[in-house]
Image 1 (tube, rainbow, N blue to C red):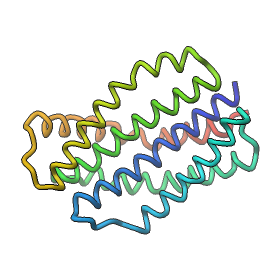
Image 2 (image 1 turned 45 degrees about the vertical axis):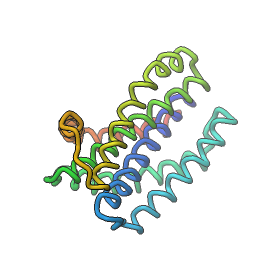
Image 3 (image 1 turned 45 degrees about the horizontal axis):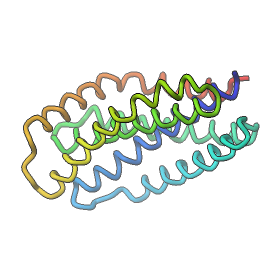
Image 4 (image 1 turned 180 degrees about the vertical axis):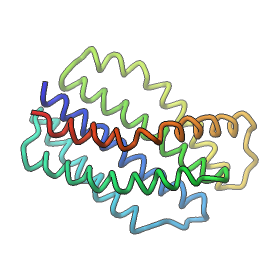
Length: 194
């Protein structure tokens, strides 16, 4: 089904934008409020466009040509930003940098899961039911990240198991960095599907 495939592209694109947004916000929080305002603005503008298009998509259960072209444009912008993000990720050397990368990946996974649930609601109830079962799993991961970020910004000592968990997730995220380009190829292919 064309619309479901296109919606999948929208969900993945939104996931990457969320990832970039959380990365920039977390990095700023961990650097005493030193935010890259310009980059955050760019990401926020793209996110707003995607969410507006998603709203139309949700009501019509289809993607019109102008919105498809808008999403493809947003995908190009997001891909460039994701390449910068990937380069920063690869250069991460200290815990705060690893934490910002990890937080971004964990939040993105939760957004993608929620997006797939929405996609299932629109197009396939079985998919919705299957991904609803993952909600608690993602919620727990986000809670761990939130706790570690909060402690880090407050200068509170981290629990050893939390530090270990962040480092483990960071390594997994780093290993998946090579797939970012392929993800964008898929996103654009899904959005273009006929």
